[in-house]
Amino acid sequence: MNAQPDTTGGSPADCLFCKINQGTIPAEKVFENDGLFAIRDINPQAPTHLLIIPKKHITTLLDLQTADEELIGSIYTTANQIAKAEGVDRSGFRVVANCGSDGGQSVYHIHFHLLGGRPLHWPPG
Ligand code: 5GP
Ligand code: ZN
Image 1 (tube, rainbow, N blue to C red):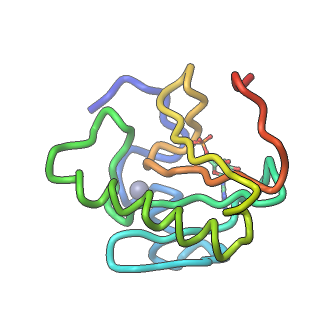
Image 2 (image 1 turned 120 degrees about the vertical axis):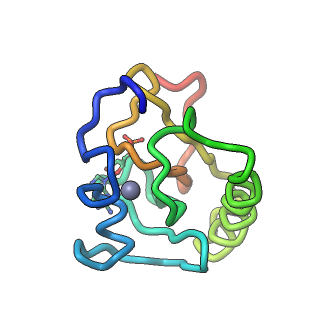
């Protein structure tokens, strides 16, 4: 358990991204394999804004376990493939995961934003 505010439910039964994975809430899936899927963000913050989401319900980065290391590694190799498919590999892109309240996490099922298609500011706001 964690003490973070939880806007989508802490269990797979009422989790937005688990529902999208199961197909009960629609989303445009651009990639899928056994461990993860990628969708377009409903409120894009850049011309390319995808979410890479493990199928396993993991609430925050703080809930990751050693057994998840291979899965999380595959997030980045998938980001590599998607960046090429989306045509942002040469211009550059960012992969970021928000954790908890100050991190700006709003959906409590871990996910990795892939942003590109415009210059991204640093430090982030
Ligand atoms: P977070 O704020 O937790 O880092 O990121 C959650 C992301 O999920 C936000 O960028 C938000 O726009 C996106 N999002 C929220 N609800 C939906 C939805 O129903 N469909 C899709 N495709 N994205 C969503
Ligand atoms: Zn979930």
